[in-house]
Image (cartoon, rainbow, N blue to C red):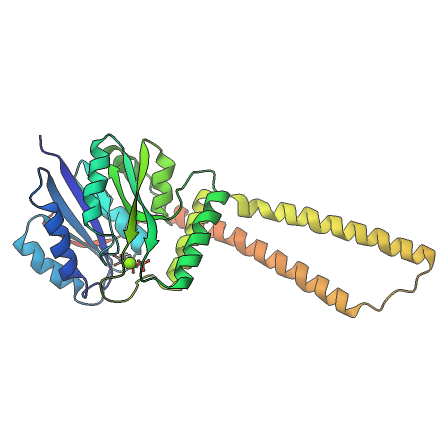
Length: 311
Ligand code: UDP
Ligand code: MG
């Protein structure tokens, strides 16, 4: 029987790139010996993205659309695409053509060799700011050191997952999702291929610093409890310093050394310890907020409308 592949493409205000995206992706996917569907997930766009995609959906039944009731975020959009995909394997890619559609065929090739997860590693990133490149590079390495799970560095969400992996992911209902981490966490036979990340075709990035920070905090807190345990070590260190200092003071007193008035050192100590305590409290807060999010048990996303799909 013919294999069927699902492409999942999240969209947030992508009216400038959507035409070219559909053209390039369709070019790559049609005329192969496999069947395909392209699932666009409209993540609450406020521009005309939704209308444009609908027009294309009318003309081509391979194109499908899931529209959210508001912006739920990139990672949630990907998850919704996976939840609704019907293919034997699912490929997630960005709409802005930074992930070249031609690479999809290479991912499929690897899948047909028997891999369950094929992630695309960025050997080069074109047209992105120095700041983005350096922070991304540092973050991926930092995360790798923090986590018990082996999350490959320099990979985004551009990857292929098999039906079996997709079904496992669908069962993971956690909210503040870091999908690429979850994919690593499930295991199975995984491999990577290298590709050059292109420049964004048009428009601006939909990942401002705030969203990037949220994604990185989600990544760390979902896969590591080390920050929570940090408090203990800093506490032990501070207590040790305090103890040693107390001994020094006592000795000074006994030997009869005149004490400094010490306003500056007192201030520094108070600010330092106060600061550390607040940071630690903040880190604990991050985890508690996540527990709170989970306990509310709200749905991950709300679908407003589906096009070319069963309701
Ligand atoms: N995106 C989304 N919801 C968001 C932000 C982004 O669905 O809240 C989509 C966006 O339309 C694109 C993909 O996620 O298809 C990646 O976003 P972008 O290219 O802006 O990120 P960058 O490549 O700059 O990191
Ligand atoms: Mg992009």
